[in-house]
Amino acid sequence: MKHIILGNGPAGVVASETIRKADPDAEITMVGDEPEPPYSRMAIPYLLQGDIQEDGTYLRKDAGHFERLRINLVAGHAEAVDTKARQVRLRGGTTLAYDRLLIVTGAHATKPPVAGIDLPSVQTCWTLADARNIAALAKRGSRVLQIGAGFIGCITMEALANRGVHLTVVEMGDRMVPRMMTPVAGAMIKKWCEKKGVRVHTRARVVSVRPDMKRAGSLFVEIDSGDELPADLVICAAGVRPNIDFLAGSGIATDVGVVVDDHLRTNVPDVYAAGDVAEAMDFSTGERGINAIQPNAVDQGRVAALNMAGKETRSVRSLAINVLQTLGLVSSSFGKWWGEIDGQSAEAVDAENFRYLSLQFKDDILIGATSIGLTENVGVLRGLIQTRKHLGTWKDELLRDPTRVMQASLAASVAVGAGVPSASRRASK
Ligand SMILES: Cc1cc2nc3c(=O)[nH]c(=O)nc-3n(C[C@H](O)[C@H](O)[C@H](O)COP(=O)(O)OP(=O)(O)OC[C@H]3O[C@@H](n4cnc5c(N)ncnc54)[C@H](O)[C@@H]3O)c2cc1C
Image: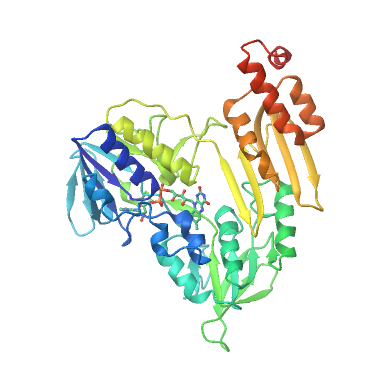
Protein backbone atom coordinates (compact mmCIF):
# COMPACT_ATOMS: atom_id res chain seq x y z
CA MET A 1 0.00 0.00 0.00
CA LYS A 2 1.47 3.35 -1.08
CA HIS A 3 0.57 6.27 1.13
CA ILE A 4 1.40 9.81 0.05
CA ILE A 5 1.16 12.54 2.66
CA LEU A 6 1.14 16.05 1.25
CA GLY A 7 2.41 18.39 3.95
CA ASN A 8 4.90 17.78 6.77
CA GLY A 9 3.55 19.87 9.63
CA PRO A 10 2.16 18.35 12.85
CA ALA A 11 -0.77 16.68 11.07
CA GLY A 12 1.50 15.10 8.45
CA VAL A 13 4.14 13.92 10.89
CA VAL A 14 1.68 12.28 13.26
CA ALA A 15 -0.19 10.72 10.34
CA SER A 16 2.97 9.19 8.88
CA GLU A 17 4.01 7.75 12.24
CA THR A 18 0.52 6.40 12.88
CA ILE A 19 0.38 4.64 9.51
CA ARG A 20 3.79 3.09 10.17
CA LYS A 21 2.62 1.76 13.53
CA ALA A 22 -0.60 0.36 12.07
CA ASP A 23 0.99 -1.08 8.93
CA PRO A 24 4.67 -2.13 9.14
CA ASP A 25 4.77 -2.94 5.41
CA ALA A 26 3.24 0.22 3.98
CA GLU A 27 5.23 2.52 1.72
CA ILE A 28 5.01 6.00 3.20
CA THR A 29 6.15 9.21 1.51
CA MET A 30 5.73 12.63 3.11
CA VAL A 31 6.13 15.73 0.94
CA GLY A 32 6.95 19.19 2.30
CA ASP A 33 7.70 22.42 0.47
CA GLU A 34 9.65 24.30 3.15
CA PRO A 35 13.44 23.78 3.32
CA GLU A 36 13.61 22.95 7.05
CA PRO A 37 12.96 19.58 8.70
CA PRO A 38 9.32 19.18 9.83
CA TYR A 39 8.69 21.87 12.44
CA SER A 40 5.98 23.35 14.62
CA ARG A 41 4.74 26.83 13.83
CA MET A 42 3.51 27.24 17.39
CA ALA A 43 7.14 27.25 18.55
CA ILE A 44 7.91 30.36 16.48
CA PRO A 45 7.05 32.83 19.27
CA TYR A 46 9.52 31.04 21.57
CA LEU A 47 12.15 31.31 18.85
CA LEU A 48 11.43 35.02 18.42
CA GLN A 49 11.82 35.73 22.09
CA GLY A 50 15.06 33.75 22.20
CA ASP A 51 13.86 30.89 24.44
CA ILE A 52 14.83 28.30 21.82
CA GLN A 53 16.98 28.02 18.72
CA GLU A 54 15.58 26.97 15.33
CA ASP A 55 16.18 23.29 16.00
CA GLY A 56 13.95 23.66 19.06
CA THR A 57 11.01 24.11 16.68
CA TYR A 58 11.62 20.76 14.96
CA LEU A 59 8.82 18.30 15.57
CA ARG A 60 11.21 15.37 15.91
CA LYS A 61 14.61 16.20 17.37
CA ASP A 62 16.37 12.95 16.45
CA ALA A 63 17.90 13.36 12.96
CA GLY A 64 17.42 9.69 12.00
CA HIS A 65 13.80 9.49 13.17
CA PHE A 66 12.00 9.34 9.82
CA GLU A 67 14.63 7.16 8.20
CA ARG A 68 14.34 4.63 10.99
CA LEU A 69 10.57 4.52 10.54
CA ARG A 70 11.06 4.14 6.77
CA ILE A 71 9.15 7.33 6.07
CA ASN A 72 10.52 8.87 2.85
CA LEU A 73 10.80 12.63 3.13
CA VAL A 74 10.47 14.37 -0.22
CA ALA A 75 11.19 18.07 -0.69
CA GLY A 76 8.70 19.39 -3.21
CA HIS A 77 5.64 21.45 -3.85
CA ALA A 78 2.50 19.61 -4.98
CA GLU A 79 1.08 21.35 -8.02
CA ALA A 80 -1.76 19.06 -9.00
CA VAL A 81 -3.57 15.88 -8.04
CA ASP A 82 -4.97 13.52 -10.66
CA THR A 83 -7.47 11.44 -8.72
CA LYS A 84 -8.30 9.20 -11.71
CA ALA A 85 -4.68 8.21 -12.33
CA ARG A 86 -4.00 8.37 -8.55
CA GLN A 87 -1.00 10.60 -9.00
CA VAL A 88 0.39 13.78 -7.50
CA ARG A 89 2.44 16.11 -9.70
CA LEU A 90 5.19 18.10 -8.03
CA ARG A 91 6.65 21.38 -9.27
CA GLY A 92 9.34 20.41 -11.78
CA GLY A 93 7.27 17.56 -13.21
CA THR A 94 7.99 14.63 -10.85
CA THR A 95 4.92 12.46 -10.30
CA LEU A 96 4.17 10.32 -7.26
CA ALA A 97 1.71 7.44 -7.45
CA TYR A 98 -0.54 6.68 -4.48
CA ASP A 99 -3.04 4.15 -3.26
CA ARG A 100 -4.11 6.45 -0.42
CA LEU A 101 -3.52 10.19 -0.25
CA LEU A 102 -3.60 12.52 2.74
CA ILE A 103 -3.82 16.29 2.23
CA VAL A 104 -2.28 18.10 5.20
CA THR A 105 -0.97 21.21 3.47
CA GLY A 106 -2.08 23.59 6.22
CA ALA A 107 -2.71 27.25 5.51
CA HIS A 108 -0.79 30.40 4.61
CA ALA A 109 -0.98 33.87 6.09
CA THR A 110 -2.73 36.49 3.99
CA LYS A 111 -2.13 40.23 3.74
CA PRO A 112 -4.86 42.86 3.44
CA PRO A 113 -5.09 44.13 -0.16
CA VAL A 114 -3.89 47.69 0.41
CA ALA A 115 -1.30 49.86 -1.35
CA GLY A 116 2.25 49.23 -0.17
CA ILE A 117 1.52 45.94 1.57
CA ASP A 118 4.27 44.17 -0.41
CA LEU A 119 7.01 46.62 0.60
CA PRO A 120 10.04 45.10 2.30
CA SER A 121 9.59 45.45 6.08
CA VAL A 122 5.97 44.23 5.80
CA GLN A 123 6.02 40.66 7.06
CA THR A 124 3.67 37.82 7.84
CA CYS A 125 4.51 35.68 10.89
CA TRP A 126 3.81 32.17 9.72
CA THR A 127 6.97 30.31 8.70
CA LEU A 128 10.53 29.95 9.99
CA ALA A 129 11.61 32.13 7.06
CA ASP A 130 9.19 34.83 8.30
CA ALA A 131 10.58 34.48 11.81
CA ARG A 132 14.13 35.10 10.54
CA ASN A 133 13.00 38.25 8.72
CA ILE A 134 11.15 39.50 11.79
CA ALA A 135 14.11 38.81 14.07
CA ALA A 136 16.33 40.87 11.76
CA LEU A 137 14.03 43.91 11.97
CA ALA A 138 12.45 43.69 15.44
CA LYS A 139 15.40 45.04 17.41
CA ARG A 140 15.23 46.54 20.88
CA GLY A 141 13.68 50.00 20.52
CA SER A 142 12.37 49.52 16.98
CA ARG A 143 8.80 50.49 16.15
CA VAL A 144 6.63 47.52 15.22
CA LEU A 145 3.08 47.84 13.97
CA GLN A 146 1.01 44.72 13.92
CA ILE A 147 -2.09 44.44 11.75
CA GLY A 148 -4.59 42.17 13.48
CA ALA A 149 -5.15 41.22 17.11
CA GLY A 150 -6.53 37.71 16.69
CA PHE A 151 -5.18 34.48 18.16
CA ILE A 152 -1.88 34.45 16.25
CA GLY A 153 -1.52 38.23 16.61
CA CYS A 154 -1.79 38.12 20.40
CA ILE A 155 0.66 35.23 20.69
CA THR A 156 3.13 37.09 18.47
CA MET A 157 2.74 40.31 20.48
CA GLU A 158 4.06 38.60 23.56
CA ALA A 159 7.23 37.52 21.75
CA LEU A 160 7.69 40.96 20.20
CA ALA A 161 7.25 42.75 23.51
CA ASN A 162 9.89 40.47 25.00
CA ARG A 163 12.27 41.66 22.28
CA GLY A 164 11.89 45.18 23.65
CA VAL A 165 10.17 46.79 20.66
CA HIS A 166 7.63 49.65 20.74
CA LEU A 167 4.42 47.97 19.74
CA THR A 168 1.28 49.32 18.06
CA VAL A 169 -1.65 47.10 17.13
CA VAL A 170 -4.35 47.88 14.60
CA GLU A 171 -7.46 45.70 14.76
CA MET A 172 -10.55 46.00 12.53
CA GLY A 173 -12.90 44.52 15.14
CA ASP A 174 -14.42 46.39 18.05
CA ARG A 175 -12.15 44.55 20.51
CA MET A 176 -9.09 42.35 20.66
CA VAL A 177 -9.46 38.68 19.63
CA PRO A 178 -13.00 39.39 18.38
CA ARG A 179 -13.53 35.92 16.94
CA MET A 180 -12.57 34.15 20.14
CA MET A 181 -13.49 36.43 23.02
CA THR A 182 -16.70 38.05 24.26
CA PRO A 183 -16.93 41.87 24.06
CA VAL A 184 -16.10 42.18 27.77
CA ALA A 185 -13.10 39.83 27.50
CA GLY A 186 -11.78 41.44 24.32
CA ALA A 187 -12.03 44.90 25.91
CA MET A 188 -10.28 43.64 29.06
CA ILE A 189 -7.37 42.25 27.03
CA LYS A 190 -7.11 45.59 25.23
CA LYS A 191 -6.94 47.45 28.52
CA TRP A 192 -4.27 45.05 29.78
CA CYS A 193 -2.15 45.60 26.67
CA GLU A 194 -2.47 49.37 26.97
CA LYS A 195 -1.40 49.15 30.60
CA LYS A 196 1.70 47.30 29.40
CA GLY A 197 2.52 50.16 27.04
CA VAL A 198 1.11 48.83 23.76
CA ARG A 199 -0.90 51.27 21.64
CA VAL A 200 -4.06 49.49 20.51
CA HIS A 201 -6.34 50.86 17.79
CA THR A 202 -9.58 48.89 17.53
CA ARG A 203 -12.30 49.53 14.89
CA ALA A 204 -9.39 50.68 12.74
CA ARG A 205 -8.50 49.58 9.24
CA VAL A 206 -5.15 49.95 7.51
CA VAL A 207 -5.68 51.74 4.20
CA SER A 208 -2.11 52.05 2.92
CA VAL A 209 1.55 51.61 3.71
CA ARG A 210 4.20 53.93 2.29
CA PRO A 211 7.94 54.38 2.73
CA ASP A 212 9.18 57.10 5.10
CA MET A 213 11.31 59.10 2.67
CA LYS A 214 13.35 60.62 5.49
CA ARG A 215 14.25 57.32 7.13
CA ALA A 216 15.48 54.47 4.94
CA GLY A 217 13.63 51.20 5.50
CA SER A 218 10.95 52.80 7.68
CA LEU A 219 7.28 53.08 6.84
CA PHE A 220 4.13 55.07 7.50
CA VAL A 221 0.94 53.10 7.94
CA GLU A 222 -2.23 55.05 7.24
CA ILE A 223 -5.37 53.94 9.05
CA ASP A 224 -8.94 54.88 8.14
CA SER A 225 -9.15 57.61 10.81
CA GLY A 226 -6.58 59.44 8.69
CA ASP A 227 -3.76 58.93 11.21
CA GLU A 228 -0.35 57.92 9.90
CA LEU A 229 1.53 55.60 12.23
CA PRO A 230 5.33 55.24 11.89
CA ALA A 231 6.91 51.79 11.87
CA ASP A 232 10.24 50.07 11.21
CA LEU A 233 8.45 46.76 10.77
CA VAL A 234 4.83 45.90 9.94
CA ILE A 235 3.58 42.43 10.82
CA CYS A 236 0.42 41.14 9.16
CA ALA A 237 -1.49 38.85 11.46
CA ALA A 238 -4.78 39.50 9.77
CA GLY A 239 -5.87 36.11 8.52
CA VAL A 240 -4.94 32.80 6.94
CA ARG A 241 -6.22 30.77 4.01
CA PRO A 242 -6.00 26.97 3.54
CA ASN A 243 -3.53 25.75 0.90
CA ILE A 244 -5.97 24.21 -1.58
CA ASP A 245 -5.20 25.91 -4.90
CA PHE A 246 -3.33 22.86 -6.20
CA LEU A 247 -6.53 20.80 -5.89
CA ALA A 248 -8.32 22.76 -8.64
CA GLY A 249 -9.69 20.33 -11.22
CA SER A 250 -8.99 17.27 -9.04
CA GLY A 251 -12.63 16.64 -8.20
CA ILE A 252 -11.80 16.84 -4.48
CA ALA A 253 -14.56 18.95 -2.89
CA THR A 254 -13.41 22.18 -1.28
CA ASP A 255 -15.16 25.13 0.29
CA VAL A 256 -12.93 27.31 2.47
CA GLY A 257 -10.80 24.20 3.03
CA VAL A 258 -11.01 20.55 1.96
CA VAL A 259 -14.40 19.16 2.94
CA VAL A 260 -14.13 15.99 5.06
CA ASP A 261 -16.49 13.70 6.95
CA ASP A 262 -16.09 12.32 10.48
CA HIS A 263 -13.53 9.79 9.18
CA LEU A 264 -11.53 12.64 7.61
CA ARG A 265 -12.45 11.26 4.16
CA THR A 266 -12.95 13.62 1.25
CA ASN A 267 -15.62 13.00 -1.40
CA VAL A 268 -13.02 11.08 -3.51
CA PRO A 269 -12.30 7.48 -2.48
CA ASP A 270 -8.94 6.97 -0.76
CA VAL A 271 -8.27 10.69 -0.39
CA TYR A 272 -8.25 12.16 3.11
CA ALA A 273 -7.50 15.57 4.65
CA ALA A 274 -6.65 16.82 8.14
CA GLY A 275 -5.38 19.82 10.10
CA ASP A 276 -5.55 23.49 9.13
CA VAL A 277 -6.50 22.63 5.55
CA ALA A 278 -9.49 20.47 6.48
CA GLU A 279 -13.05 21.61 6.98
CA ALA A 280 -14.49 19.07 9.37
CA MET A 281 -17.54 18.89 11.62
CA ASP A 282 -17.28 21.02 14.73
CA PHE A 283 -18.16 19.46 18.09
CA SER A 284 -20.20 22.43 19.30
CA THR A 285 -21.97 23.70 16.21
CA GLY A 286 -22.42 20.46 14.27
CA GLU A 287 -21.42 22.47 11.23
CA ARG A 288 -18.33 22.32 9.07
CA GLY A 289 -15.48 24.58 10.08
CA ILE A 290 -11.72 24.87 10.39
CA ASN A 291 -10.33 24.69 13.89
CA ALA A 292 -6.80 25.89 13.20
CA ILE A 293 -4.92 24.79 16.30
CA GLN A 294 -2.14 22.26 16.63
CA PRO A 295 -3.89 19.73 18.93
CA ASN A 296 -6.70 19.52 16.41
CA ALA A 297 -4.25 19.02 13.52
CA VAL A 298 -2.51 16.22 15.43
CA ASP A 299 -5.72 14.47 16.36
CA GLN A 300 -7.17 14.68 12.87
CA GLY A 301 -3.86 13.47 11.39
CA ARG A 302 -4.02 10.44 13.69
CA VAL A 303 -7.65 9.61 12.85
CA ALA A 304 -7.12 10.04 9.09
CA ALA A 305 -4.04 7.80 9.26
CA LEU A 306 -5.85 5.01 11.10
CA ASN A 307 -8.57 5.03 8.47
CA MET A 308 -5.95 5.04 5.69
CA ALA A 309 -4.34 2.01 7.30
CA GLY A 310 -7.68 0.19 7.30
CA LYS A 311 -8.53 0.69 10.98
CA GLU A 312 -11.93 2.36 10.86
CA THR A 313 -11.92 5.26 13.31
CA ARG A 314 -14.42 8.05 13.80
CA SER A 315 -13.32 11.49 14.91
CA VAL A 316 -14.86 12.81 18.11
CA ARG A 317 -15.11 16.13 16.24
CA SER A 318 -13.02 19.11 17.08
CA LEU A 319 -13.87 21.30 20.01
CA ALA A 320 -12.77 24.92 19.76
CA ILE A 321 -10.20 25.34 22.53
CA ASN A 322 -8.41 28.67 22.51
CA VAL A 323 -5.90 29.29 25.24
CA LEU A 324 -3.98 32.47 24.81
CA GLN A 325 -1.28 34.33 26.65
CA THR A 326 -1.20 38.03 25.83
CA LEU A 327 1.67 39.88 27.50
CA GLY A 328 1.32 37.57 30.48
CA LEU A 329 -2.48 37.60 30.69
CA VAL A 330 -3.96 34.14 30.17
CA SER A 331 -7.35 34.01 28.50
CA SER A 332 -9.31 31.11 27.09
CA SER A 333 -12.50 30.37 25.24
CA PHE A 334 -14.14 27.04 24.58
CA GLY A 335 -16.90 25.58 22.47
CA LYS A 336 -19.86 27.85 21.73
CA TRP A 337 -18.46 30.70 23.84
CA TRP A 338 -20.89 33.13 22.20
CA GLY A 339 -23.87 31.10 23.45
CA GLU A 340 -27.23 30.28 21.92
CA ILE A 341 -30.25 32.51 21.41
CA ASP A 342 -32.47 30.28 23.56
CA GLY A 343 -29.72 29.46 26.05
CA GLN A 344 -28.79 31.09 29.36
CA SER A 345 -25.60 32.79 30.40
CA ALA A 346 -23.75 34.10 33.43
CA GLU A 347 -20.86 36.52 33.67
CA ALA A 348 -18.49 37.44 36.51
CA VAL A 349 -16.33 40.52 35.91
CA ASP A 350 -13.49 41.74 38.12
CA ALA A 351 -12.17 44.53 35.91
CA GLU A 352 -9.66 45.82 38.43
CA ASN A 353 -7.87 42.48 38.76
CA PHE A 354 -8.31 41.38 35.15
CA ARG A 355 -10.39 38.36 36.05
CA TYR A 356 -13.41 37.31 34.07
CA LEU A 357 -15.63 34.33 33.51
CA SER A 358 -18.55 33.88 31.14
CA LEU A 359 -20.56 30.65 30.99
CA GLN A 360 -23.06 29.69 28.32
CA PHE A 361 -25.70 27.02 28.88
CA LYS A 362 -28.19 25.11 26.81
CA ASP A 363 -30.69 23.53 29.19
CA ASP A 364 -28.47 22.27 32.05
CA ILE A 365 -25.39 21.66 29.90
CA LEU A 366 -22.41 23.99 29.66
CA ILE A 367 -21.86 24.61 25.94
CA GLY A 368 -19.29 27.41 25.98
CA ALA A 369 -17.09 29.52 28.22
CA THR A 370 -14.67 32.43 28.17
CA SER A 371 -12.25 33.19 30.94
CA ILE A 372 -9.46 35.59 31.77
CA GLY A 373 -6.94 35.15 34.55
CA LEU A 374 -8.67 32.08 36.02
CA THR A 375 -6.21 29.46 34.86
CA GLU A 376 -7.26 26.96 37.52
CA ASN A 377 -10.64 26.56 35.78
CA VAL A 378 -9.40 25.88 32.27
CA GLY A 379 -9.38 22.07 32.48
CA VAL A 380 -12.73 21.96 34.25
CA LEU A 381 -14.44 24.18 31.69
CA ARG A 382 -13.15 22.13 28.82
CA GLY A 383 -14.12 18.87 30.53
CA LEU A 384 -17.67 19.98 31.28
CA ILE A 385 -18.22 21.13 27.70
CA GLN A 386 -16.63 18.10 26.08
CA THR A 387 -18.50 15.55 28.19
CA ARG A 388 -21.79 17.45 27.92
CA LYS A 389 -22.35 16.77 31.59
CA HIS A 390 -25.82 17.50 32.99
CA LEU A 391 -25.47 20.05 35.77
CA GLY A 392 -29.07 20.06 36.96
CA THR A 393 -29.54 22.25 40.00
CA TRP A 394 -25.88 23.28 39.79
CA LYS A 395 -26.74 25.19 36.63
CA ASP A 396 -28.85 27.60 38.69
CA GLU A 397 -26.03 27.89 41.20
CA LEU A 398 -23.64 28.78 38.38
CA LEU A 399 -26.06 31.33 36.98
CA ARG A 400 -25.86 33.02 40.39
CA ASP A 401 -22.09 32.56 40.80
CA PRO A 402 -20.17 31.28 37.75
CA THR A 403 -16.92 31.07 39.69
CA ARG A 404 -18.21 27.94 41.48
CA VAL A 405 -17.59 25.92 38.33
CA MET A 406 -15.07 23.62 40.02
CA GLN A 407 -17.57 22.56 42.69
CA ALA A 408 -20.25 22.08 40.03
CA SER A 409 -17.97 19.81 38.03
CA LEU A 410 -17.07 17.71 41.07
CA ALA A 411 -20.72 17.37 42.08
CA ALA A 412 -21.71 16.31 38.57
CA SER A 413 -18.85 13.77 38.39
CA VAL A 414 -19.72 12.26 41.78
CA ALA A 415 -23.36 11.87 40.77
CA VAL A 416 -22.46 10.15 37.49
CA GLY A 417 -19.70 8.03 39.11
CA ALA A 418 -22.12 6.77 41.76
CA GLY A 419 -24.28 5.34 39.01
CA VAL A 420 -27.45 6.84 40.42
CA PRO A 421 -29.72 9.26 38.64
CA SER A 422 -28.43 12.54 39.99
CA ALA A 423 -30.51 15.42 41.17
CA SER A 424 -29.08 17.17 38.19
CA ARG A 425 -30.44 14.67 35.71
CA ARG A 426 -33.89 14.71 37.27
CA ALA A 427 -33.91 18.46 37.26
CA SER A 428 -33.05 18.59 33.58
CA LYS A 429 -36.00 16.49 32.47
C1 LIG B 1 3.14 32.05 15.08
C2 LIG B 1 2.18 30.94 15.32
C3 LIG B 1 1.84 30.56 16.61
C4 LIG B 1 0.92 29.53 16.82
N1 LIG B 1 0.62 29.21 18.11
C5 LIG B 1 -0.23 28.19 18.34
C6 LIG B 1 -0.53 27.80 19.68
O1 LIG B 1 -0.05 28.39 20.65
N2 LIG B 1 -1.37 26.75 19.85
C7 LIG B 1 -1.91 26.07 18.81
O2 LIG B 1 -2.63 25.11 19.04
N3 LIG B 1 -1.67 26.42 17.53
C8 LIG B 1 -0.84 27.46 17.28
N4 LIG B 1 -0.57 27.82 15.98
C9 LIG B 1 -1.29 27.14 14.89
C10 LIG B 1 -0.63 25.80 14.54
O3 LIG B 1 0.72 26.04 14.24
C11 LIG B 1 -1.36 25.16 13.35
O4 LIG B 1 -2.68 24.87 13.73
C12 LIG B 1 -0.65 23.87 12.92
O5 LIG B 1 0.63 24.16 12.41
C13 LIG B 1 -1.44 23.14 11.84
O6 LIG B 1 -0.74 22.00 11.45
P1 LIG B 1 -0.90 21.39 9.98
O7 LIG B 1 -0.04 20.17 9.95
O8 LIG B 1 -2.32 21.25 9.63
O9 LIG B 1 -0.32 22.52 8.98
P2 LIG B 1 1.09 23.22 8.89
O10 LIG B 1 1.80 23.22 10.19
O11 LIG B 1 0.85 24.52 8.23
O12 LIG B 1 1.92 22.27 7.91
C14 LIG B 1 1.62 22.16 6.54
C15 LIG B 1 2.88 21.91 5.76
O13 LIG B 1 2.53 21.63 4.40
C16 LIG B 1 3.39 22.34 3.54
N5 LIG B 1 2.71 22.57 2.24
C17 LIG B 1 1.75 23.48 1.97
N6 LIG B 1 1.38 23.40 0.67
C18 LIG B 1 2.11 22.41 0.13
C19 LIG B 1 2.17 21.85 -1.17
N7 LIG B 1 1.38 22.26 -2.16
N8 LIG B 1 3.05 20.83 -1.39
C20 LIG B 1 3.86 20.38 -0.39
N9 LIG B 1 3.84 20.88 0.86
C21 LIG B 1 2.97 21.87 1.12
C22 LIG B 1 3.63 23.64 4.30
O14 LIG B 1 4.72 24.34 3.81
C23 LIG B 1 3.78 23.13 5.72
O15 LIG B 1 5.11 22.78 5.97
C24 LIG B 1 0.34 28.85 15.73
C25 LIG B 1 0.68 29.22 14.42
C26 LIG B 1 1.58 30.25 14.20
C27 LIG B 1 1.94 30.66 12.79
